[in-house]
Image (cartoon, rainbow, N blue to C red; front, side):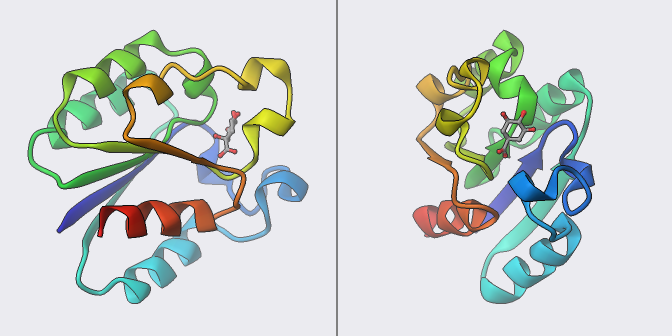
Length: 137
Ligand code: DQA
């Protein structure tokens, strides 16, 4: 099974960025542990701060991978283009968020991705990604 994790803007700073919200762990360390936890899965990881690069990656993997775990970060709340890309591809997408977006500012309550995602997991820290993987198994 081929699963890609796609992280959007500012998630390269996990561990350093607002740790009281996003935690103290870097994504690199978390990702290594995730790979060890699910040895049968072929994982790929992609992070970009650029909206178009995220769309290009969705197009690239969206007809061949078995699952996409997408944390589009701030673009979740602003990007019609990423929402359209999720709709355009065949591979199911699980939208994840580390923080509980519904417990935060109003502008984080709307997602352009959710309506076309298979499901949404929000607020469970990095564990949100584990649960998304399990949902594909
Ligand atoms: C986030 C929530 C978004 O609102 C925010 O812009 C992020 C991260 C999360 O994982 O909690 O950058 O997607």
